[in-house]
Length: 87
Image (cartoon, rainbow, N blue to C red; front, side):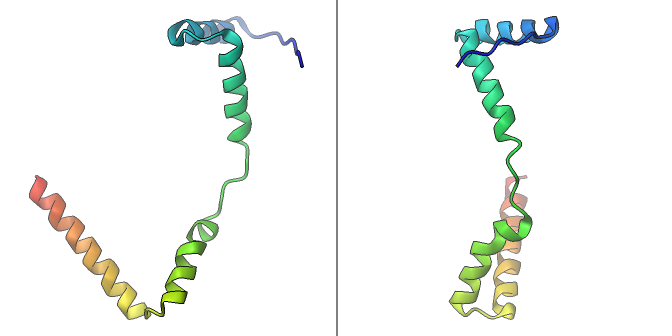
C-alpha cells in the first residue's frame, strides 16, 4: 500500500536526519515511527491487572497476610542494608 503525506519541513528534516544517522532508508524510519505511535495508543494495563498474577500466586500459596508482610519487610531491610554497604 502506498500513502502520500505532506510533512512539515522540520519534521521532514528530523526523519531524514534520523535515517542518515542510523544508515537506514527513510521509509523504514517513517514506518517505525508510525508503528511506535500506534503501539503507544494501545490501552495500558491497570495496576490491578498487573498485580493479578502475583495476587493469584499468593492466594494459591496459602501464605498468610502476616507472613507476606514479614517477607516484604525482610526484603526491604535486606535491600536497604545492601545499598548502605555500597555507599
